[in-house]
Length: 384
Image 1 (cartoon, rainbow, N blue to C red):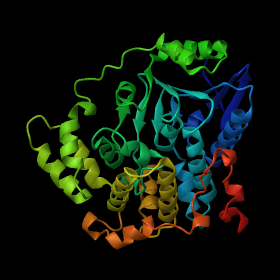
Image 2 (cartoon, rainbow, N blue to C red; image 1 turned 180 degrees about the vertical axis):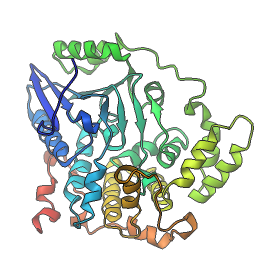
Image 3 (cartoon, rainbow, N blue to C red; image 1 turned 30 degrees about the horizontal axis):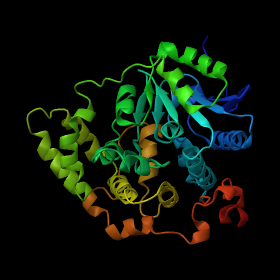
Image 4 (tube, helix red, strand yellow; image 1 turned 45 degrees about the vertical axis):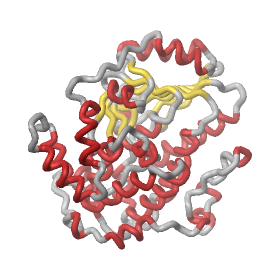
């Protein structure tokens, strides 16, 4: 039966069955984008269920053809009219990302469609992330003047070789089998079997990880990637994306594209040249810094970057990128600065500069204080 929702439906539905809890991202007509309401509801459910001894297993899925297409870009765009109007949702979601990575109960993501950017942050960290042939993954933020966020600077920096830099800078898409092969998902299940798997997990009514894994494996298939998969092009990706700067990466990639067998690179190169120079430079530096940082340190840096970008500290590119992509949809952004050589390294230093300790994202440091650090208790809220 088709799922029907309207604007009055909650962004997230929570259902309880025995020891199992099911979360459904519930804005299918908006591709389940992450809104302030989404973050508030998810955080409330997850905190309550982690603390509830009766809860053993959490399932998360998306209504309609998307799991989640990521952050609500229109919220960001409208937020330009009022300084820091998006600060609460950014703070709250990055804080929630940490708790999803470190959640104490067994989590299973059932992903049967699009999962991009922040939407994929609700999938990749789960104990089990089940994907289908309808899966489409990407982190395309750099192209619109933003950066790879929601913990993905940390995740991408730990991928083989320099594939993380490639995915972050190009916004390249991966399918379900590629995600499993790469370790960003745990199981590939044909879409026609996903509903039955959900029913079996609910009936199982336990959170034992080994037994949950065994249940999923009963319906999963081998993730055999296609011959032309980007994962089979690791050598040339490492050759190019290991370079120290975006300019050097582009130069190496363009040179490699002229070699026999590399015709696929032409469209990627075209996309890179159309992307925000500021977004590309911030993203590369962010992923490189992440290589030597913890998840908490990465989320704190990503929080600073996001707030500084939304404050137009060195560029308005993120608003121009959103305008061209989703508002006017002319796909003709006018970047400022217009080219990589015009992006000043000293300006980049400003965007990356640490905040005073009380203005940083407050990640809990001990288990006893695990759910402390919420926005409502932060310096941003109390200073209003």
